[in-house]
Length: 112
Length: 114
Image 1 (cartoon, chains in turn cyan, red):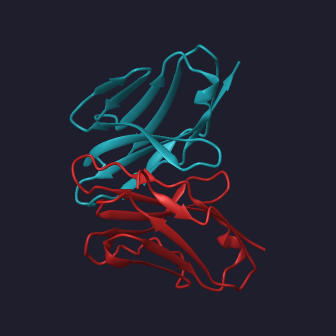
Image 2: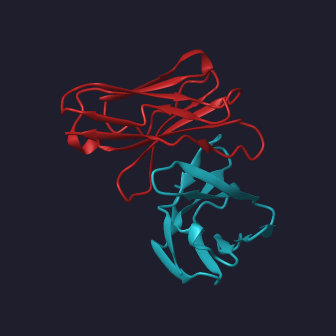
């Protein structure tokens, strides 16, 4: 079955880069997603990557996908205090319709 | 509407009472999802509607939980005889069902069972 794992916590200093990692088990993933959740809010879609790509860049965000190792990462350049939030990765698996499986979330704390 | 709308935003109820949570998805989205998020935890899938197909209810934790989607749009999640362990944030999401089809989430309903 599908399983998506993330580390629980990451702390960085303002201005540094943050790298949030995610591993998944199902090799038939079609799309992989990153979401951000701020306190008291729902999940906000940050970006997604199609499984036949290995990199996607969007302003301060860079997504890297290593299909061989089933490893996904989100790099945030020049991290700001406003980036403090919980970040969730999710995968959509072929033959699972539009269902997404989410990781447990990584809490990012940015220190001034 | 512009986004997924959920109501109420907060609900406090006594143990044993029934509650109804409402979700208005993005107009035109064929897929609708309910998730539950306990304090500090990840997302627990509850139920998924896709068009006119039978819903995927595999995540509902007990027969006290049910959901319906009327007219392919608004959905209601009902919890009967609420228990304290039902306290959580209930998140609704919708998606277009085509292409990358990312989920768009509402802000959730925070349910507290006293």
